[in-house]
Length: 468
Image 1 (tube, one colour):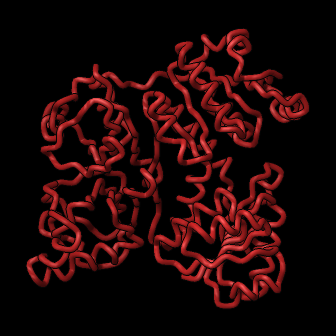
Image 2 (tube, rainbow, N blue to C red):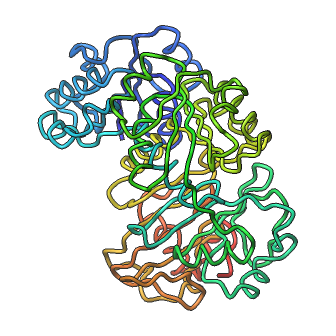
């Protein structure tokens, strides 16, 4: 696919990197010489310096033959005009990053009038992810699939949890659980586990299943979520605005600390039911004076990674149990985790996931990438007949690095075993390691040759069959 990206900032650069890795033909346009030079030096993409609104520049970039234009400059207005111009010049599809809350209520009109196919709002998406995580307080991360019928949570394995040292098979037998331990992250290694893999201290494990089953699993191992009643938010930007609105609906009381006095006044007008404090949230005395010890949660979402990290470490030392930290520089994430801050939000990565899902095609209902894309969790709807249907999973020869995590059939959620089958209309959630899957045809292509030759070709290409 030929894709033009306007804006090579944090989001644009990450998008170009990921899309180039998926073998798309990428052209990046930006006015900033330093940014363009960095992109040109580090990525295998075409780089052009100039204004993405310019018709001449877009034509030079090959807009007439392009399949997709993505506008992610720092200006909502520039992004929308870029997309409008590109549509007039013949591009097939457009994506614009639009972040200002003033546009939030007009998105349907904007999409129609400007010919936008997708509008991305990273701050609103980040706020939604934070709200989901607060709804299940013991989890590092929470995701929903199949329109809320399937939940996936990420847990940190701690020494007091009785699962330490036990195999996946023993855990299943012990809990009689209908959840799946789908992914284990151990020392930055992604493991798609079989029944013999044992759980170790400090593993990050991804649990997937019905919400009630996931809750019961956590309860067995002492990780039952506690209700969050009040939180403190550091930073008064767009994420805070969107998040406070969501938390009000959840019945969670919110206190905001913002260092800019003018922004405090703006937030007080926009959020009349929320207490807004003008102060420095990296100052321990300020946090103590605002009763940080009485808070159930703390969320650091300023525009500075260093401030977010510093305040989170201070609050962690004061005993607040649920801390969520926004990090923009992805190379900081591992450092932050090593310091004991597990719940990390990156709007840049959230945006990348959303756009990659769109680029993969309509077949992908949901897409979650973890550990720099080393593993992906995807949702598909089985709408057409193929060799996957009505055959026991154990006979399909699914590669060892790909597993079918759940099958959703009507209102039933099944964590499948070898004898289960996939039927037309099912929603299936697949976990894949080191393999980008855009549709079920990719999985069919992997195994179809093997079905004709006792599944050998597919097995050799992608690894050992997993015993489900």
